[in-house]
Image 1 (cartoon, rainbow, N blue to C red):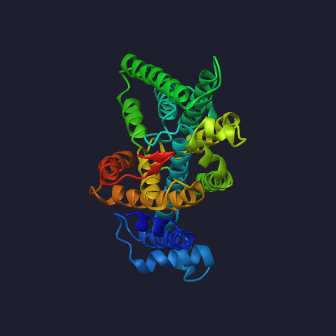
Image 2: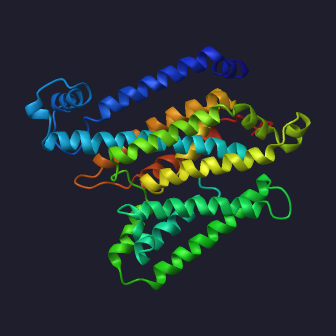
Image 3: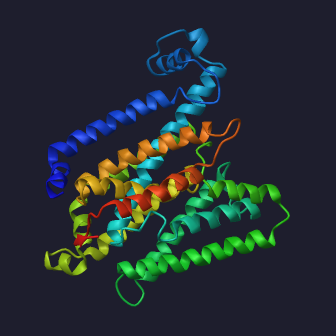
Length: 358
């Protein structure tokens, strides 16, 4: 078993795996764009892509029209958004598990999900934030997620420095408060069935609102976040050892923990802004990668980003085709896949997390 692990932990194997996964991601994007409920031939799909990207092909057929609208403005933006959101959630989950030194942590452990849900509920049912523009629901969700994260950091620092345990407790408390307020608003304002249904749909996640305008910024946020955390892999590795060990090595983790929490809050908040609540991606993907390639964040973060992108891309494809003439909320599908996979990963074999085997 030990020799088997060492093979996966070697640098050449890691590089080969990263190149292979990147190739799978590119192939998945090229192939998945041909899949959908509309009957469009592969020739027409790739004709649209060649014309839009390289300017090649029949301009009369592919410059505009229903085929171009479906391929270029609906299918492809959804897949690109799935890639960026999947990468952002996977990276955030990996970092969050290191920050709180808890393998069960995910991007929403600090109450981000409840904060986002509260923001969306207030926007949909009370119209709060309607002056912020057409996508005010997403903006309010982002604001709610970020404010809750900042509040968790503030509460965890009361009476001393923030520790992993204090962060988890503060996140749990604020998550309960936000959920209670959301439930109260839903209970009191029960005469708007359309808005209540919209809240339910939003909290289950969807990539249907994808557009090239929002995708550009989401891709930028995900890429910058990944690059930033890849440069911080040494500090993240130290966090797995604990504060005492880090101090003996000359590193005070407190300020880094606060900085990383703020950056992950932006990543998760913007993912929620674009796609709603999508669970389990930031929980199972880091575990799956860690089991094969170890806990070194230099390897873990890029591999988790690419794996998460592939996972969410195909999850979105399944959501669009699994039910005829309807779309399954992507949060439901990721939970249905993620929960059994997480249980399987936990019982199949042990692996290192932090200072020892778990």
